[in-house]
Picture 1 (cartoon, rainbow over the protein chains, first blue to last red):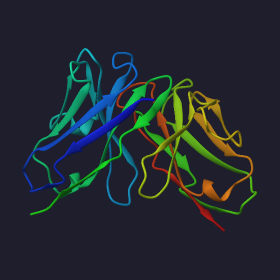
Picture 2 (cartoon, each protein chain N blue to C red):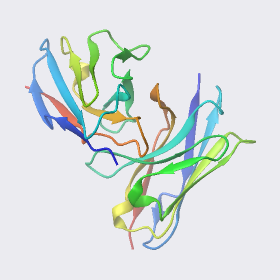
Picture 3 (spheres, each protein chain N blue to C red):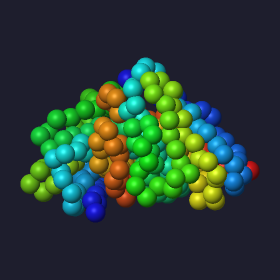
Picture 4 (cartoon, chains in turn orange, brown):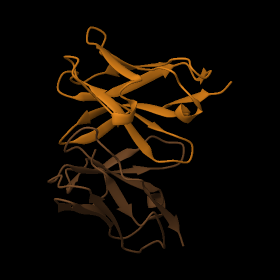
Length: 117
Length: 107
């Protein structure tokens, strides 16, 4: 049974850097892409980006300049950094396991990130 | 980026009803379309992958169809636990965009 567990700071000030990490337990780390998705209060799901075991990444177009996803295969972990946050980045952030054919089948528990001065 | 548009945005129905939610892609995505269910305060749950494949453990009253640009999710007989928000997502090309969601409410 594959599980992903995420953690990171939940309260940030404007202009700070959001930093979240997700650990993968069980299953194959190399056969999937590992995603970050967020959901602003009362809004829909927003795909942020992804990474695979070799470090290949893709990002949402509008976040490409501020988002960096990295991977540590030795620990089966991947991370998200989002620079220069504003109130618009306030959201629940999810890490997840993704396959282009099978969809997103494993989700983290979500981390609420609030940006406020 | 491929735009995904769901309709309706909200839907009121009764237990036992048959309901269908539509998802349209801005360009052909062949069958790389997935459906998720989300309940308040919870992470989304995968229901259907690649347009029509039922994820393990998902009740058979859920079904999906479509190809190209037009897709649908059907719930054959609504149960109380099905009242939730539903999202489609394309995985044809990154960024892997979601539809805006369809909120299914009790009539």
